[in-house]
Amino acid sequence: MSERTLSEIISCLAGYDPEALPVVQAQQIIREFITPIKETEIINLRDALGRVLAEDIISPINVPAHDNAAMDGYALRAADLQPGTVTMRVVGAVLAGQKYDEKIRFGECVQIMTGAVMPPDCDTVIPQELVDDSAQNSIRFQSELIQQGDNRRFMGEDLAIGKEALSKGTVLRPAHLGLIASLGMAEIPVRRKLRVAFFSTGDELRSPGESLDEGSVYDSNRYTLYGMLTRLGCELIDMDVVPDNPNDLENAFRHACENADVVITSGGVSVGAADYTKKVMARLGDMHFWKIGMRPGRPMAFGRVQSNGKSALLFGLPGNPVAVMVTFYFFARDALLYMMGANTEPLPRIRVKSTSPIRKKTGRTEYQRGLLSRNKEGQLEVSITGAQGSGILSSMAQANCMIVLHHDQAGIQGGDMVDVVLFEGLV
Ligand code: AMP
Ligand code: MG
Image (cartoon, rainbow, N blue to C red):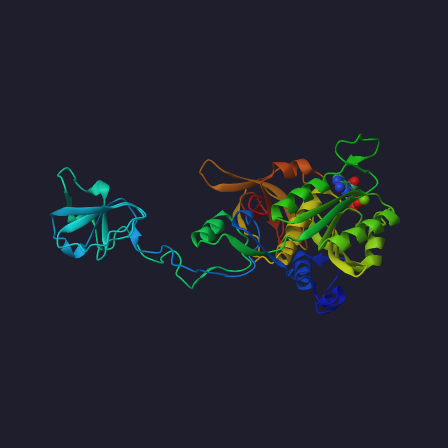
């Protein structure tokens, strides 16, 4: 984590107001406070999906290793071709994995299969479906059908020896696994997984499977957090529900901080009465309590907690179920990826038409649950998925995107363009 305290970072910011902190300023403070974990490990390629590459991969070989055929057909020298109908003698055949070493003479060709090494001097492949091969040991075709170099893959055209094939910080997707395999590497260096401890706070919370007594609610936040953190590729320490009392909370925070890189809690950070969460957080660490200019998700605690010489980053997310998801996606996600050593980029946004008007105040960022679909004309458009209260998870579950209405933006009319962030691919 940063050598600087949160207060030192904040003191460099013009116009810092913890009671009305714009989203972008909160994101900036978080980014300046955190540093990536350093430790790496060597793992099997098969285990590397979703992991963060720890070193650049330099190609140890040319891929492909030889010039080879891109189609089944006949390898020839384009210089031998004359305009019009051409007849060529077939002097041999070469299958994938084989070589044909003999030189060919004028007017000769070699039958070749996709991936087979090009015979010496041959520079072009005429595809099987363009030739008449009804005569024995010869083919006929129209020479206008091909040009020199057609259907030939060059040695090293995919990856050249000594060149960077992948840069460190890449979050490994299926294409990357295939690419690394094509270099013949069975093991690769990755950052160790980020350890994230998480728990819910509140006396009213019951876990699924328990009975629901008067006034209590089921703990849903630990399940959305579990889903989002799992997709992000973190190592999870699920610490259950912690009741609103100072002893239990202190024990939980200490245990979390001694065993994890990051602690994520939900609830107890608003102005509510029975909330000891904030007091315990403040006692254990360098914490700031923000009211962020956003909806949903106004209260959030951020900082670092310490216990017995260990420290961990802490996100104290709000309690309301949709606020938890929104603050996770727009603050924690980027921070965790950065700590994992990943090359992070701002979330991709697309601009689409809103089917209906949306009311909004300037001076805060609003996130609406949206359903992106195609209209009759085949154009993408977005509509809102029902009630937008910060506790209403059903409209979140129906949504496939978030509509982002920016800080300075006012309400919009139906038909106006809006920015949306898609859920799929988010983590
Ligand atoms: P708080 O900020 O702790 O006052 O919580 C705000 C609202 O979110 C309250 O209605 C809580 O009951 C609710 N809430 C807090 N934590 C959870 C949770 N883990 N699952 C579902 N609802 C929660
Ligand atoms: Mg609470």
